[in-house]
Structure formats: C-alpha cells, structure tokens
Length: 107
Length: 126
Image (cartoon, each protein chain N blue to C red):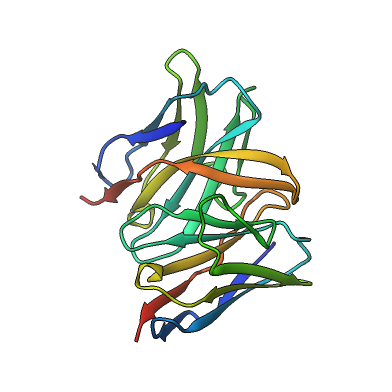
C-alpha cells in the first residue's frame, strides 16, 4: 500500500523566511502529486498540482518540485497568512492517500 | 460555479448508522467526468479519502474502509450521499464532500478535489 510521509511535522519561521516542506511517497507516483493548504478551521485549498504547477490564484511565492519519490513545497518569503497545515496527496491511482501534514507557524 | 454543501446529524450514538448528504449547486452530478467524493478529518488529525462515486453509479472505496461505507448518487435531487454503518468513536470527524475531476492542460494530466464542501462535524457519542 502507498504511504505518504511528510517532514518536518511542524516548523516555526519568521515572516520573510523561505521554508521548505518535504513529502515522500513509498513508491513511484510520477509527478501525480498535489499540495493543499489548510488554514486553522478552514477547508483545504489546492495550491499545486502535477507536483509543480501552481493552481489558479495561488501566490507565486509558493513553488513545488519533484525528484523521484521526493517532493518539495517551498514558500519563498513566508507571510502571516501562510500559517497553516500543508498536506501532500497522490493521484496516480485510487485510493488517494494524504500525507500527515506539516504545520507551519510564525516564530 | 459549482458549490457543495454537506448536511446531516452532528451527533450519532455508537452502533447507529450515519447518513450524510452533499447537495450540489451550479452543476449536475450527472454531467462531466467527475468523481463525487467523501473525505474526513478526525479532530487534530490529517485528511482521509473515503471513496467516490461516478455518474454511472460505480463506486470505489479506500480498501481499509470498504464494507462499512456506501456512497450513492441521487440525480433527481442533484445530491450524493454517504452511509456509514455501526459507527464508533473512531468515526468522529469532520466529513467533507468534494468533486474530483480530471484535467488536461499544458502541465499534462491532473486529478484534483475542487471544490470542497465546508465540512460537517460528526460526533459519535452516547
């Protein structure tokens, strides 16, 4: 069964910092990976699809990349509104598996 | 613009059957290549995909959950539903409905859950 892991589980950073979140798949999923942002008490919002393509309306400070089964979400210039939990999710095939999330807050 | 809204009881007793409905507005559950999906998020936990139904009525469930969940479509009401038998405290969660869709653009193929409903907290407690 596919497993998705994320690291770190949480991080604190200052406004303006560049933060890097990692997601790893237990098997090859090509670039069939999504990143979601879930602000506290809110519905998950799609950030990135196909591992690196920004969804419409998502600020350009968000970017994604892939290397084999490792995927990275980078926030270049953290903003207060970026405080959230970030989830990755495969979509190469069902069942769709979410990573456990990385919680990002401000230092 | 498609909008999804969950409805159902906020509190159910252990061993009872939970029934949730997702009402779709701004689009039809029978048009397009969409997968009408249920997900859940236990308190303080991550997201879990439960399963989906297609306009044809075909369904697919997360294997570890199969057998307890049933997802169905009611085209006459433009709704789809989730039924969960024999609930336990472990089923306490925010339940989301969402539309899963296949997209093709300059980046190639993608499949996304968009939009989502606002979520409905269901608590299983005596």
